[in-house]
Image (cartoon, rainbow, N blue to C red):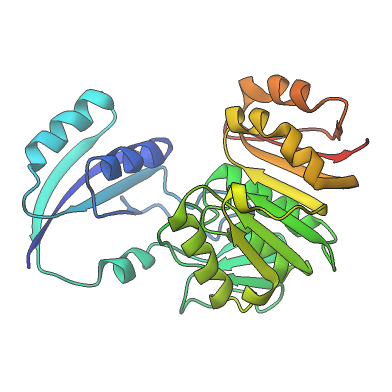
Length: 291
């Protein structure tokens, strides 16, 4: 069965938003590749591994009108996309093709590595993760900030809740870094499926509980990590702080800089916040429960 792909050139800062837009229009896969001769060295912890000028390629089935897709792209991203092209392709395993562009990433002592790609350094903790059903491979600033923070903590024998787990990357990382047990919570059944698969792949499934919010066990844990969005973080403040033991650590991400003060205000009196960490317009808030 033939397929068709639409590709264009774009700046790295637009890659994520254009990718998400194409997926909403029915793209079966979106890949990013080098445009020009710019060398991309092994990224520093938390950096998004993209070239300043990137080529984006989206795969569609043959029934999709790529002319209409291009019109919508130019309307929503004016003066951003250039050098459009269309190509007909024969069938192939697209998920494996995507993995050609996903390279090992370092977050301090923690490495996120796709299947069949060993980390550049044998030292450290290695988490095997492939793009799949749910969001979360470590390339987005909010996820990267959480991974870096987890890698800096002493997680030996602690218990942790990953609220809004997505791919389960944070819960699985915590277990590989020494946590005794993790609870991964999400409203999306695909997220829970992906989390279970990633836990199996990394041999920590026995230490992991996956559940919907309404099925979350009544327990108190040492660490709560929530990488979602500002509004649900504020709505969930009573639940998340209640789940955290006194003196326990809280990490909140998915927060834009202009939302930081609102989050801190909602959690004040319960959480003593440390200095915020900023990256690309996003903020990681960490602190401990004081009462």
